[in-house]
Amino acid sequence: MTTGTTGTPLRVGLIGYGLAGSVFHAPLISATDGLALDTVVTSNPERQRQARTEFPDVRLAAGPDELFARADGLDLIVIASPNKTHVPLATAALKADLPVVVDKPLAGTAAEARELAALAEQRGLLLSVFQNRRWDNDFLTLRGLLAEGALGEVQRFESRFERWRPQLKGGWRESGDPAEIGGLLYDLGSHIVDQALVLFGPATRVYAESDVRRDAAEADDDTFIAITHAGGVRSHLYASATTAQLGPRFRVLGSRAGYVKYGLDPQEAALREGRRPGPGWGTEPESLWGRIGSGQSPLTGGGTPVPTLPGDYPAYYAAVAGALTGAGPHPVGALAAADALDVLEAARRSARDGVAVTL
Image 1 (cartoon, rainbow, N blue to C red):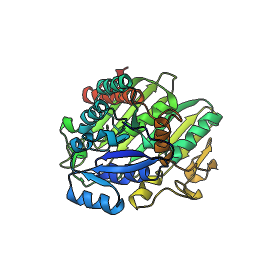
Image 2: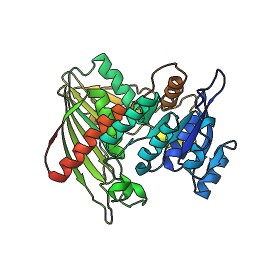
Image 3: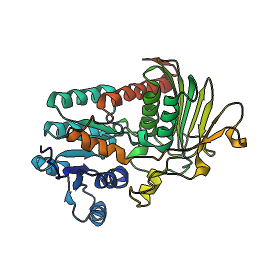
């Protein structure tokens, strides 16, 4: 593996060019100083054409083995393929002495995640998990408010990632086969659990309700997770594709004030539309700002508007590039992902057995 030299971009091999690869990883990699999208791995002819159209200089490979065969010509592997491939592909990349970024979830179990972390440590390689929602505009804003103590002692954190998708889209994410690691618990749940643990620390108790609501659906599409944190905060987390009326993205209640924020960070929508990071990236209009206050509902004008900080997905890959060149620590380590998987596994057991699970 080559670590790059001054002025020479690090060469990235991207495995997978579906939603994650084409909408998130490829554009963000190409927008990062110090990184170059060298190769895209996909066996789908349509996706190969798409990759070549969007990145004319990119090399194409039909499968991961073709990529690993020339590991000496790469500096980083990014795994954006279906969930069930994350562990075997990350293992293969690490054994080829290549640093790895893996889309969430890192693995199907916390034990597998910790095994990968141990392998990366043994080989002295970066292993990072793409938890882009740590750089959502609302999450960055909330972290700032908490750092300032603006809410007082936080008592309850409500986080919703809700959608209204009454019709199935198909594909492995909606498969009921446990091997696929599909369903919203591991999809959107990976985001909202990670955010809760970053904000409020380790979980000690987990209760969950997980349902399959839509006709012909196989995997959970409506899930609630309650976490009791070691510090006493209670997190109530919702992930749903069947929510006809969407609730606030965040509702955070403290001893002094509460913060309520509606609407999703704009970066995913911008990337889907083909826009790329640049001036004004990640910003939203004042009409979407959250509000802080006490005693009144923000929907009736209560509270004071809080300017939303710009979202910053590009910061993730900038930090990865910095870590690979010795300029700083990498973001989102594998052990943090394992902690989130502990919660997701406990949530699955809780929903199945109808009990709270102590960690």
